[in-house]
Length: 206
Ligand SMILES: *[C@@H]1O[C@H](CO)[C@@H](O)[C@H](O)[C@H]1NC(C)=O
Ligand SMILES: *[C@@H]1O[C@H](CO)[C@@H](O)[C@H](O)[C@H]1NC(C)=O
Ligand SMILES: *[C@@H]1O[C@H](CO)[C@@H](O)[C@H](O)[C@H]1NC(C)=O
Ligand SMILES: *[C@@H]1O[C@H](CO)[C@@H](O)[C@H](O)[C@H]1NC(C)=O
Image (cartoon, rainbow, N blue to C red):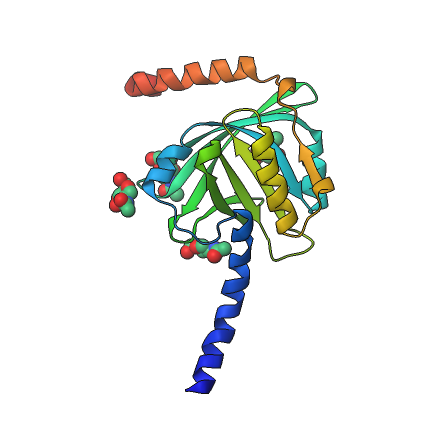
């Protein structure tokens, strides 16, 4: 009996550790509901990120501005991601499909044949959400924040606290300056195209 209890406790340890980040407001493994998916269906700005992967940091540093639209498809647990990056004063538009793993609260994306998982933390009060990557890996962990408007001092504090809590330094945080947007024209064009294809799906195909 006693041995069994010890074994159960040992097997729970990794789980308890993984739950620690919750003290900083990060949720790990909390299922994603349909209501949350509906809430995610919006335009978001990518503002601060703290990430220890050198190649990813380099990529972020090149970006002047990023915003994106999320469109969840409840039927097959996927989510369309349409991103507008401003790089070297130019707009780069990309669209891809994310997979939603509702049962463990993760989103995943294929990139170069590799599936990357992120834990979703919803901050409804702040109109924002965080994505946590590889929190257990001291060399690869990352945390990023996306919100519907520019970051408020209060939200910045929430994010800084979370970054410190998962074992990174505040100095690792990179802020993306959303005043450098060069994607406005392209966004307008793209939205018009989408509106047209929604309106006349048959004619759009012809
Ligand atoms: C979420 O929505 C999908 C598609 O409408 C539906 O099949 C599923 O049962 C819903 N899940 C819950 C928990 O309501
Ligand atoms: C899920 O549904 C969307 C919209 O209907 C479709 O574009 C996408 O290809 C589907 N993805 C998978 C993996 O079935
Ligand atoms: C856009 O997508 C292509 C193909 O998936 C990828 O090679 C490129 O790096 C992406 N660009 C950005 C800015 O994410
Ligand atoms: C979440 O669930 C998906 C699908 O079951 C699984 O592939 C993935 O490894 C899980 N991720 C984590 C971090 O538990």
